[in-house]
Image 1 (cartoon, rainbow, N blue to C red):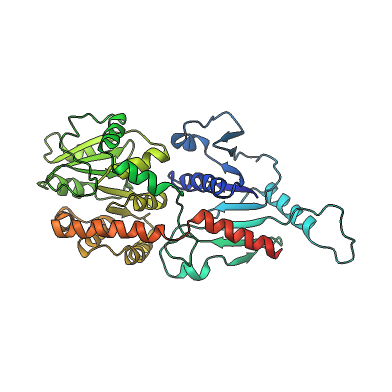
Image 2: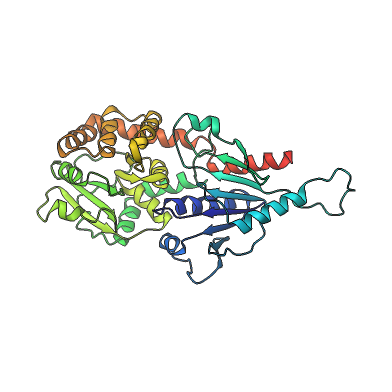
Length: 398
């Protein structure tokens, strides 16, 4: 199979991250030939330094990266066309899709051709991730288009009735080996510029918790996050926290903490590749994450996580958050903290939620939730495998 994946960067890097993982996953799982169309190569180059900004088409890890410019390159559509998050392919490409579909349509009175034409492209709209129940009934639904083409909705999700989540076959093995090695974790963090002196109080949680040690946490949030409340909660915690924050995220955080902050050490780290971001999540005791790609990767870390869902008008995002919490099933203390983080709680309520969630019973229950979340979701087929199977079934019906 030959597939085209179209990706537009909306406002962050999550859309590109999902598409890059999907492209590599389809190639690895089934040997598909992939062209990944990206409208913002500089953004992609931040997570994939091998990307050359001056090339229209380039190969990275066996995937053809296409600069989605205007006008778009005149390329023949593949067997599968995937638009990520409702970003329509360019008009000229859609016209080529119609031409291929028309050529593949049988003519009742025509004799058998000497060489059959390629089948019509399978057009997939890869939707955003959601835990809401309605996703199951909309997953894989066909959507006839005015120009005669057929588009199919494909919903990632957290149940067997959805498209599943992106997960590499060897992910758990690589994670477990890394988390069992304190030396590997320390070497990785030192490679990010974190000195041994700042890690002196941190004991990697290799199979167990170390309640007396420094807590290692990561912070990846939207500008709406209640940062002042978080700083107050961490500074007032008797257990110190080493907080790792990517460059460009929460730019006013250090000023909120002040030079004399006790119990909180904020360290800026560089923008990371996808593989290195996974390792960062694997190191941490707790991960604050935002958006779609990061919450999935934090789940595979098997460690407690706090998800800041993408804010929407009229608090629609809170309905989506509650749906996810109902599936994640954290202990009440952790649920209260996640809700406080997403509703901009003041310092007092957020500090109280933090104390409860990180207390000995609350923390142990949360760690159990994180391990169960990883275990249960890992038992289901991943998104790439489900998409491959769906396209194969459609092709058999053609």
